[in-house]
Length: 108
Image (cartoon, rainbow, N blue to C red; front, side):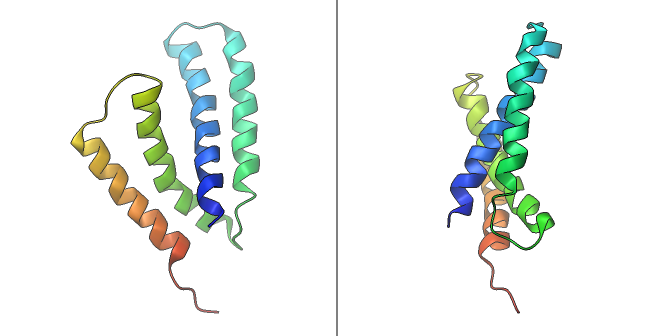
């Protein structure tokens, strides 16, 4: 169960890092925005290695749904744009997929 909080923190780090690049290139912010952006992206990559699984692909696949849900939250909380029902429905579908990957029974 520790995977979920790690995924959420990793998603926040990835989104913050990518947003720093977005701010620099699309919002005409200072190039200094790239420094914390790169730091956030390094933190994101390190956090994903903390997920307890034998396969990187499984860790990355399960992360996808949580990333999408966190991105919708970022849009709402940071960018002040309320998600619509389609944003929420899509995120819910992806989160179900992540749960299947994370918690599905595995054969030895």
